[in-house]
Length: 93
View 1 (cartoon, rainbow, N blue to C red):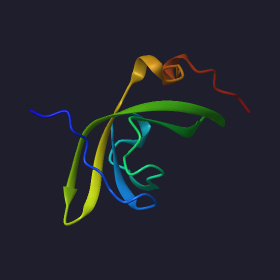
View 2: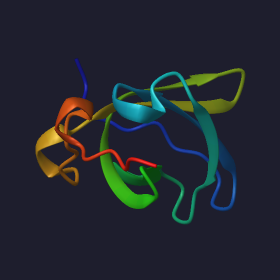
View 3: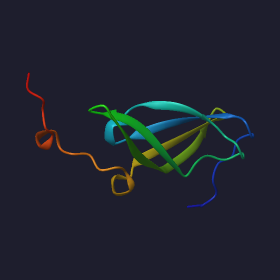
View 4: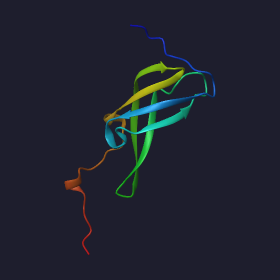
C-alpha cells in the first residue's frame, strides 16, 4: 500500500462523501487550493437550533474518470458533544 495522495489541478473540484454522524450519506463538492484534498473537514449542523461542529477525517481517496472522490468518516472524539435525545429538555406549552 502506498501513502501517495491522489492529486488534482489547483482550483479543481473534488467530491466529498460523508460517513457517520448527522451528515452520513451526504455528498458535497470542494475546491482544491493546492492540488490535493483536505485531510480533515469540520461540518457544521444545526442540532436543536445550535450550530454544532462535526469533524470528519479522510479515510479513502481515489480518481474516477479524472474526478477525485474522497471519503470522510466521523471523528466523534474531536467533534462537539451532543446530548442524547432523551437527555434534552423539551419545552412544554
